Image (cartoon, rainbow, N blue to C red; front, side):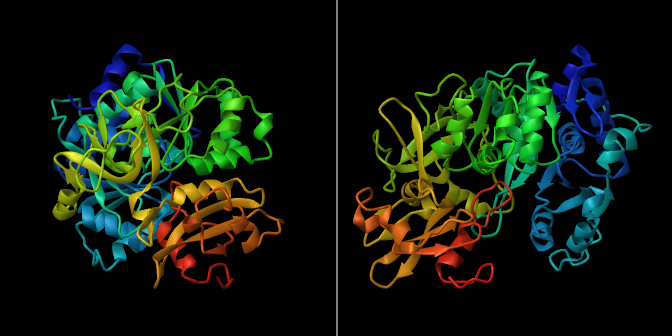
Length: 512
């Protein structure tokens, strides 16, 4: 069964129920299903896109992307969500690498699309067609109102549905392929995680070009016939106001957005009582970002996953905290997880190793990257590249990114351990730690610190914070001060760019 049948079923059971609430106009389940059918017909018969071919979407959050997702499911076409925050050459890579035939975009990105199509990677390739869809004028639902419709058929749930390009914190992004079955099993994991039900109101503010915004709550809510309150993009004031005014029961936020809400002047002015839980993840989540919400009566549950796992793989359930605060949880209903040592043996409880995931929600591989796909899997298990441990109670804990581990004099140093110390300093706004080559030790840790505005912060005061708390050999050897930390669209720190700072490059006009 293909996932477009979810919407067709809800259109029959609850035709007038809102599926998507959006500032430019709501869609009931009946209207949503009609838009999907008309878009599916348009893709197949007017644009000539065949089963297995790729279409891309470039735009901020809008109902149109969800219409395209389910229309792709109905037609067997593969959708490539594009990160609108990337530069045209980066987007051209995704379009070229995926072999996209049709690029659908919002009017605001018309110039970007021209630059993409003119990029040498595409070489003026006439096989890539562009089409503009305006969400402020009703999007697909209005544009195709008079079109014929393609009804739900009998597609294959094992068909590829999405090619999601990885965040690219290091190196060129790869396209992780997710099947329709992966989206279904992810939805089942998410339902279990959130105790999600059809009566829920889900607030989506994270970008849907990432699986976090698309699949942690949004597609699971539509699977269950719930209502999605969709924002074009995240803004702390608008998010706080929406929680107070519209009464969502669930939302997903990453650490950067949690921090933005807590530090906003209107933080204490809005009622958050409607929220049954906030889900968060994507990186190490500091307790100081979760505690302010918990103190206001809103549970914060952690999820662990990646683009390659759709992403819901390991999670806490609503009601599992505060006893498990800080843990990433347990393997989901449709997931298996383990910790593996570098020698290829499973780690005993309490020992750090690489987190590996197994399940039908995991990617089938990277698009056009056979060699990298083979390296990423071990006997069917997906090697996440992240370090963690399982405690004696079976709880999983995230430790650090494997690629971020600093090996100094033969000893492993985990940046996350040092970053926790830095975050506790009153004069530090944010900080991270990376390795820098050293002729004697191989690598040494370097702290990159963003001071709070108006605070007097120097290297000595930063380094003193580690005395008596962290083993001497782990201490940062120097401190680099920056105006901000470079981040990608999901708020993850760009490690490659931070390493440039640590090597003494110039940022914001200041010598490091």
